[in-house]
Image (cartoon, rainbow, N blue to C red; front, side, top):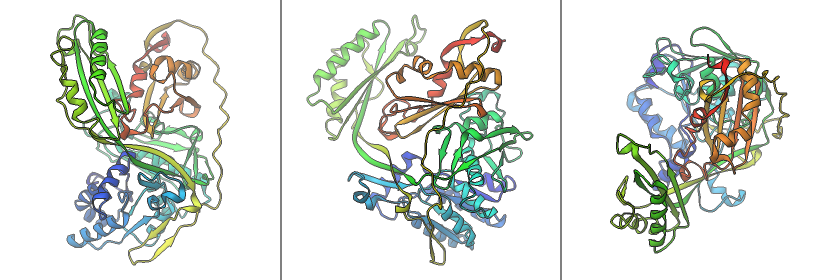
Amino acid sequence: MREMVTGGELDYLTGDYLAELTMLILARDRAKSPDRGYAKTFLAQLEESLGTALDNGVKIVANAGGLNPAGLAAAVRTLAERLGLPVNVAHVEGDDLVGRRAEFGFADDVLAANAYLGAWGIVDCLNAGANVVVTGRVTDASVIVGPAAAHFGWAPTDYDAIAGAVAAGHVIECGTQATGGNFAFFTEVPDLMHPGFPIAEIEADGSSVITKHPGTGGLVSVDTVTAQLLYEIGGERYANPDATLRVDSLQLSDDGPDRVRIGGVRGEEPPPTLKVSLNAIGGFRNAMTFVLTGLDVDAKADLVKRQLEAGLTVRPAELEWTLARTDHPDADTEESASALLRCVVRDSDPKVVGRQFSSAAVELALASYPGFTTTAPPGDGQVYGVFTAGYVDAADVPHVAAHADGSRTSIPVAPQTRVLEPVDPPPLPSPLPAGPTRRAPLGLVAGARSGDKGGNANVGVWVRTHEQWRWLAHELTVDALRELLPETRDLPVTRYLLPNLRAVNFVIEGILGKGVAHQARFDPQAKGLGEWLRSRHVDLPEAYLS
C-alpha cells in the first residue's frame, strides 16, 4: 500500500484481500469473537499509508471487511482518530447469508455463506464523499469497477464500459501477477526481485491501459497481461454481478514501455443470480510421508501400505496414497535417490486421524522396508475446510451502502439480466502444412497460467504468434491434455478457444476435491498445473525451435 501511494500518480488504491480460503479463516476467527472476521493486515498497512493517501487525494477501496465490514469501518475510524486524520469511512454489507442457511437450503454446518456482490454499493459510498470504502464479499473486480463507475458516472446499463473495468480489474486484482510474478517466461522479466504493482488507467468507455509506477521492477507486456486474463476463468463469458465480460472480445496491444492497452471490450447483461461462497468444516485431516530410498521402490511402497492399513485399529473415512517418483537411478545424493510415499487421512473424529494414525505409521520403523524413515514425526490431525459454490437470486440478497453519517442506501438489483449460456465455439484457424517436428517441451513455445475455483482448476495456455496459434488450436485438444496430464483422464474437461488472445483455456472439474482447504492434492490450488503441462514433451514444429 505504501509503495503505491508514494510511488507516483494515483486516483484510487484498491485491494483484494479475500481468497476462498481466507473466508474460512475469517469465519473461524469470527467464531472466537464476534468483533473479528475482517482482514487485520489491512489496518496495519493503512496505518502507514492513510495520511499520505489523504494528502494526495487518493481514495481507498478494499474488500478487507470480510465477514465484518462494519467492524472494520469502525476500526478504521478509530485508527484515523488516533492518527489525527479526518477521514470519511463507509462500508458495504449485505453479502453475509449465513443466518439464512435454512431459507436458501444451505447445509447447517456452513460457517460462512457470502454472496458475491457487485460494485454499485461502492459507487454510492464514493459519490457520498467517502475517502475509504471497505466491503465484505464483493467480486474481485468490483473494487475496481466501483471507482471507475463513480468517476465517469456510468449507468447500470453501460455494459461495455462496465465490462471493460471488469477486464482491467481482473488483470490487477492479483497484484504483481500482472507485472511478471508467477509468469511462464519469468527469465525475460527485469528485476523480478521487486516487481512493481500494476495500475489500470481506465477511460470513459471502459478501455484501459495496464502499467506500473515508473522506476519499479518487473514487466508489463502483452504476455504478462494475457497470462493474468487467463487466470481462474472459465469460458468466453466471465460473469460479474453488474455485467458479463466477453473475454473473446478483448484486444491487447502495446502502448509503450510497460504499457498494454485493453480495448474492444464487449459486455452483456449480468446473470440473474449471484454466486455464494460456502465454507464449512469438513472434519479432521492428517498425513505421513514415507521416504523410500534406493532400489525396489514399488515393492517398498506396497509393503508399508499393507502394513499400515492392517495396523490401524479404526480405518479413517478417507485414506489416500500418493507415490511421487522423485528418485533417480545411480544418484549421487541420498535425497535424489529417494521417492516419497504420502498417506493422507480424513475423518470426522479427530482421534481416528490423530496419534492413532501417525503413531501407527512410525511404529512400523523396525519391521518394514529397509531404510525406513519419514519426513516428520507423528502429530495430531488438523481441521480441514470444504468450499462449495451456491447460487441465489440476486433479488433475494440485500446490497447496502452504509455511510459515515449513519445513513444507509439500498442498492437495486440489475435492471436487466441474461442467463449465462454457452457460446458457439469459433472456427478453428487453418492448420499448418505438414512439416518436420521435434519432441520437446510444450513450454518452449507456449506460456500457461493455472488456478483454482473451488474444486475445479483452469489451465490457460497461450502462444505469441499467429502461426503458433494455428498449431496450438489444432494440437492441444482435450484428448491431448488428458494424455499429457494423466491425473485428468477420468475427470470432466472442457476446452474454450480464445483466438483473440491466441489461447486455449481448459476447465478441469473435481481435480481439487472440495477446494483448497480440503487439500486433495499436494498442489491444492493448482498453481503449478500449468508449469507441469509446459514441461511435458510434444511434437513441436522444428521452425519454432530454431
